[in-house]
Image 1 (tube, rainbow, N blue to C red):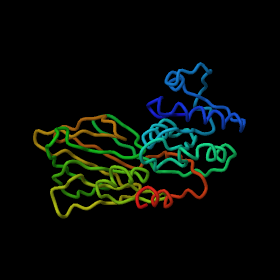
Image 2 (image 1 turned 90 degrees about the horizontal axis):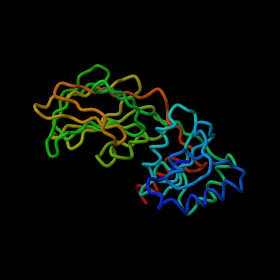
Image 3 (image 1 turned 30 degrees about the vertical axis):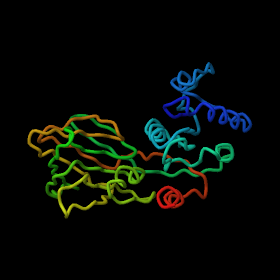
Image 4 (image 1 turned 60 degrees about the vertical axis):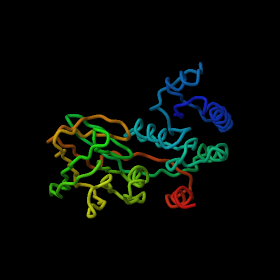
Length: 268
């Protein structure tokens, strides 16, 4: 079980989850940090022995869980206690009914492509997106970019977003980029505030690496993976992004499709 960063937000929901799990004969495994967060004395267990990860929180908590269990074969299902909750399968007011179905095995697992990024000698996995952004607030940068080894020129902009399908409805969407329907094995590349009328987003398939080089004189570029800065690109430095070898595993209720979520989240 992984929960929202604020224990006061999730305390009552945790009690509800424990009641459903007890009624269904499901053993809850709480990582040590969750025991400390909620001031619990129950013995913890090894999270990697679990069959399923239950997330009480929003999309940020879901991303944390999906990154943590990437490559383990353990899917994550979310109950939304955040603002958008696009990655979650169950609303907060349907916690009991939804989790009862989940614990009875009534769920499907969606495999979502992830990203792998290398920059300044550092390597990171990203579930949502990789961003190259100006390190100086208010300063534009000049980014040279290539895909699959073919140069595509330079662009004056505030930055660039490379999004996996799960992240295409986040920063990429708010920046005017394309939404990638779950099931596509591709990534979206979108410039942030480009100083051009010709800059357009691009959808890139697996096997074609994106390389971004900082061509700005005197301004650094920060590399960010899933909202966490991890490397600094000085002028002349590059980062490379590709679709990663391991998908994230998202558990969802039957009938709760991508298009259902898309309609209720962004159009209703």
